Every structure is written in C-alpha cells, then in structure tokens.
Length: 396
Image (tube, rainbow, N blue to C red; front, side):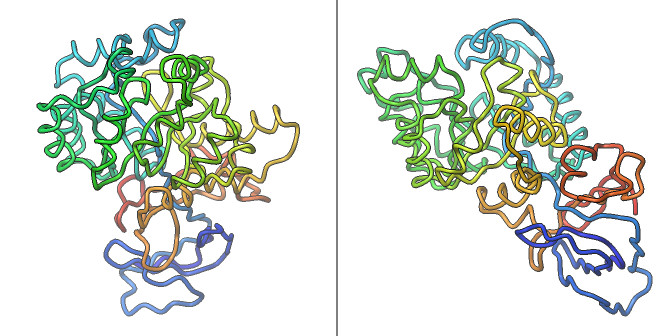
C-alpha cells in the first residue's frame, strides 16, 4: 500500500511533515519519503486532507470489569477495587464468563474506534482469567498485551513474616507465564517481599501498581517500615503503574531501576486520589506512558485522557506544557516502555496508525497539530484505523 500526499507525525520526535509518501508492506512501514514510485496504481491511495499519526497505546487497563460501569460510584477506593474484598472482585467472581467476555469484546471494539491499536491489560483471576481474555480478543484485530497474575494475596501477618509462595502456587506460575505476555501484580501491600522476588524471576514483562493512594503509601510504612514503591521494586519491574503519591526518593529509584511509569490521571481523579505530578516524575528522569485503567470507573478513551492531563496539569502548575509531550505518552513513550516496535511512524516499525480528517469541523484550520490532537480530536475526527498494515476500522 502506498499513501500519497499525506501529512504525518514522523519518528520518535513526532515531526510534522506535510505532503509525504508512506509505503506499507506486509505489517510494517517500508518507506517514508517524497515522491515514492509504485509499480501498481491499484495499491496507491491519494491521502490529501489526512493526517497520519501513530496508533494509541493504552498502557494500563482492566477490561474485565467492563460489566460494572459506574457501580458504587460514591464508595472508597478499597470498597470499589481492592483485589481482596472490593466490589470489583465480587463482580468478577459472581459473573458468568459469557457475560464478562461479551463486555470485554465491547470495550475492545470501542477502543479500536477511538484509535487505540494496543492495550496492556492487568488480568485478574489467575490462569482461568488469562485464558478468558485471550478467547475474548481472539477474533478482534486490536493488539493485546496480557499481564496476568496468580489468584493469590497475603495477609498483613504473612507479609510481616515474609512468607513465601505456597508450593501449589509456585507450580501454577509457569503455566500462567507461558500464555501471558508478562505479569501484572496488584501491589506490594498484598504480597511479601519473598513472593515479589519469586515473581521477579519470571522472564517476560513485569509490572505492578504502586503509590496510587495516600492510604496505600501509609499502609506500607505501617506494616513493613518501608516505602511501598521501594518494596514494589523487589519485583524488578519493567514499569510501575500510577505513582500518584510517590516521593522524590521513590521516583529517583524508579528512574534508575525501571523503563518508566504508566500514569492514569482520569482514573486517579475519579477515585478522588489526586493527579500524577508529571513534572516531578520527568525531573527525576522517568519516562511516562498513559493508560485509562478500570473500565468500571473510566472510559477507555485516550483522547479524553490526553486532554484532561494536559489542561489539569497546566491549571495546577500554572505553567505551559508542550502538547507534543502529552501525545508522546500515548504513543512513542509507551512503545519504548514496552520494548515493542509500535507507537511510532518509522521505517521497519509495525504499521499501527490513525488517519485523522484534517478538514473535520473540530480540527480545521489546524495551526498546531499536537494541540489539535490532544484537545480537539475525538472519535468523530477519525477516518480510519490501521493495525499491522490493515485497515480495521473506517476507510480511506
């Protein structure tokens, strides 16, 4: 496929280039240049009026709770989503796989229509939960990165004693890791250091929630005398989730020992838990990605996520932020954190991308493409979505 006369955000810096030609072969960007010639006019498309941007990477989701949208709206964080006793865990355990699967599929379809080409899911429920998600997305084109976990948590006394994995759980772990893309742990406050270290020996992606709430930070200090984040690093994670209430010491350690942090600003706000301090995180040297978190409490919409983060941060900090930096969190940065060939329009990278209509009512005239994407674009401005070199939604 040869895309002629298209505007595009090219490379890791998302450089805006107009009237460029982009050739896609198999599932990758083959050539990006001026005046590329094609032997076949059949596969050549005039894309004047379109803006090509990298497909969005929703770097943190829990789509299994899609069936519980806005339940217990006024409850506390723990009452809603605590992995051991929250209403979410009760919903997941008491809902049939058929219903869970139906609404997971719906969420995936919704994400595709919103330009999300990859999502990274923390899947509860052990091996059975992971298998259910794999079956639910099997016939959908969206790129899924599944981070599973054993159906296992520990009490405060077990954490204080540093109790290890029970033998039966140690035997279950290899089977889980085999079918998943990695491990996604609920948090350090539900696991002893011994268990976190056991998880750290797995060979695929590793991630963990950390310092999401003031209460979780205080609990770690109370029961172990240590920072929640420093304990989470016992997992040797590739990246951490949230870090909304992390200290400078926590962020400095995270910068040195991980590839980055995935922040979820709208989810944090919907739970009344504050806003991630992106300036503080970036000053510590942390690379940031963006996720929408639980569908139960937040819609899987990266346009809304970027818009919200950009404006709320500027409002709180009372200083300007380059919208390109926000867009990178949803694309380029996420690809780097995940160590995947996605999130960027560049030769030899996977052709996951969004075609935006530059003449859409909400976008024209487009004086600053980065600002336009971050706070004006929406599902209605998308002409088409491509995953792996194939149009999976809309048309061009």
